[in-house]
Length: 123
Image (tube, rainbow, N blue to C red; front, side, top):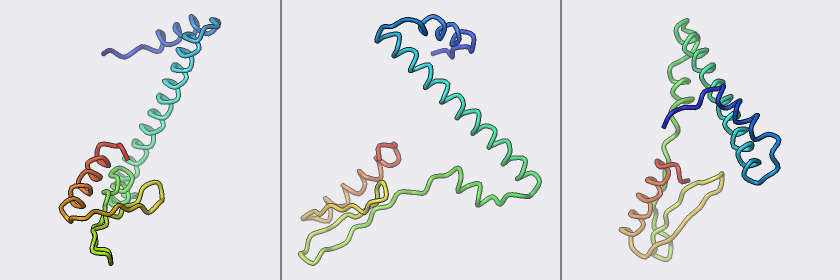
């Protein structure tokens, strides 16, 4: 897969801008999304360069930089309920969630599946 040049993107914009079909509108919308992602990429590249310069000058702590770059590890806990079942508790989108299981092994498998989804970006 090769990258499209800025000239090619401009050519696509000019070609589809005046066409009133659903396909042309979808292409124009996608080109807008490409522009937004490109702007975000450039902003993040500029932020990285700025932080690198600050780090070289000793103005930024390494721990603070790691917090910006490395996401917090997801966690889920397993505990026994008063009814004797096993509860898996975790947070997602600011909400505390839980699910109960009859067996601890099932709770552990569910927690492992949750952590796998977090690493894969599904949660």
